[in-house]
Length: 372
View 1 (tube, rainbow, N blue to C red):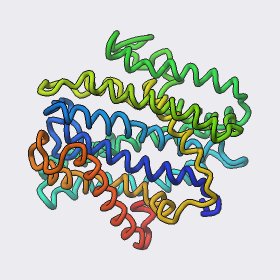
View 2: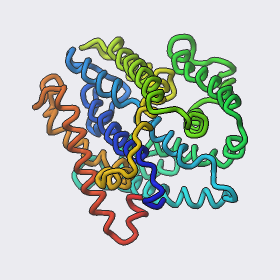
View 3: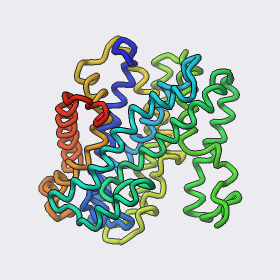
View 4: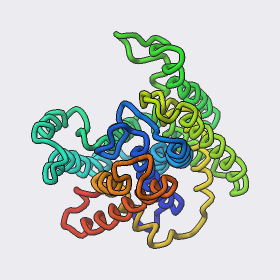
């Protein structure tokens, strides 16, 4: 996209959401039981009340909207497709942008840790064999790429409908999507199998109206059917939505996170999935707030960081894990900095290192195939 065509508030979202991702992963060092790679494991334990509060605040309250924001941004920019663009042309353009860097970092996370003893040769070979099917063991954050690819795959299918749909039509679909966001809670507290799910069928009644497709339709609804909303109205609606959604998300973690008790991470994060009502509400709210930015042009630093954000996301775990290890210093109960400061400092240092490295790599010939 040419500079003159850039949407300023989208650049701000990319930068802030990129930092939020790092804030999430910085927080995970303070409740996961195995944080060698900087990510939470299947089991969690909070060391004390300070960790309980600040992880809930940073990870749940502030940063949990990061992934849905990236999904909405992609849909906001790409849906509906330009008139006359074919499905093969759309796929070629989008996938040539993200697949080569994705594959490069799949390989880097598979082999690069061998250089500093971060993994064994056996683990590296096991990861390599699984690459056609999933992300490497040292790159859990790359899970995001698979639903993003899925979103790109479905855009040409739903784009014709969105071109001719009315606001009412989209509200009907979004209502069904909102209902589907309760499914993670029903799975946790009612039954692991609902609405037709069983060991021979994983596709529930609302399967095709759930997941990130809902954020795609929401992005189009905001762009087309809420375009007339004034800044004042966007703030009056967006701010309460974000505060309520974020507060609930933070509280849900605090409620389950009793210090000193070993707990399954999915239960501790019972309301942190990205397609839950609270995260949806907070995401809708903060997107409306960002859309109030009406600058004719973003500051140069924001534009530059926005263009680097994909590469920064891909590589950031190489920096976050050692930075977190240094600051935590083997004691999550009493790190080298107070927890309220340690989490954002880890995220900020990771953000800075990733930005500088991505910028340097961008000068290489063919860098778009490495960092986007």
